[in-house]
Image (cartoon, rainbow, N blue to C red):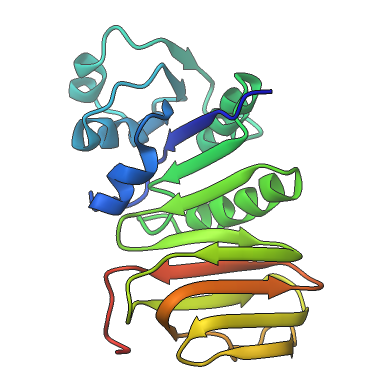
Length: 216
């Protein structure tokens, strides 16, 4: 199957940056309810708009009259974001960029987006979550490379106990490290160059703040 990238527009925060624009360039786009407002900021037109539309006002709906819409009842088993990702996968996505997945008024939604991304990664789908100010990628056993500006903050949050964790290219490198579940030992590190992560056991989320140099 050909490699296909989809951007999913979610309802959380978005600061439009060069990194965001470069990440979504050339991808297909699906919006989830109020995430459609990010289409205006990014200058993109989604091929599909899904949700119960309880958080999309009439002005936003009127701006995109020709975008196909799939309407769901408010009382449903999945969030609009999960419905949007399922639609993308059905259309052949094997890489997903979740824009507006972090921050926002609903911390339950932001946390669910992280959990959704982890579940997708376990299915072999490449996932990036981004708000412009923050980025997150699921980290499963194996190697992960991330290019951040020198001095940018990042953290590794264990979604389980971790074993055999290596971090290189950082101010505080670790080698063959075991991280107990719930430990903050790998929070607030600083990129010194291209970052390489290796993990033998467990699952984690790498969160980065590409424009935050407060730790430098």
